[in-house]
Image (cartoon, rainbow, N blue to C red; front, side, top):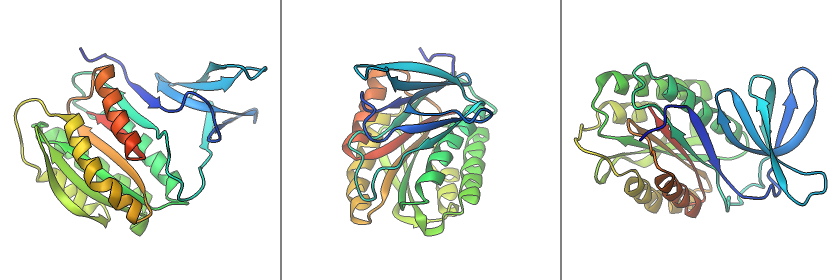
Length: 253
């Protein structure tokens, strides 16, 4: 059963390594390093080492009081343990608030990444989304995200629509959000449960090599009316992203 809460899970390394995030209090200026592991209900969950350095503990921060800066890895170094985000959402989100929140997370990551790297963004759209209202929300949100990013050639995108099988809607990656929006609005409508894992696996098999050849960071964004509601399914999605050295955002409407 899908949990009735909004939670962003970040699957990453168990140690802090050399990619610690930098947290700064917006009022006091206090700064420390740690690893952001989850966001839930206005709270940041941060993994930090103990004073003796023998283990890590989780520190809870109020999201509106702290700013977070991700420490980038060196250019052209693939992420061996990429962050994969999965979204646990209510069964119904008719006004699209959860979608907008998740796209804001993706936009924040992309805005920071394109300052130093080029990106191949692969959108996966679930054909089982039969609601014209939700499709309109997706189209507008994606279009506005591109308008704000203004990335031009820094971000090129491909689009895959899927149900039981994956279908290439925009095979050759291109810049700009217009083609992406058209693919979403014109996507076929399918019945029955969609296979998110198979679709992501097909997209990774097609685009991981493309991203490497073009020297781009690979990002997958799943737009689906039905979110992965089991730990096993989320782990399989995260494992596919890890093998592709990609970041994954699974968005639930």
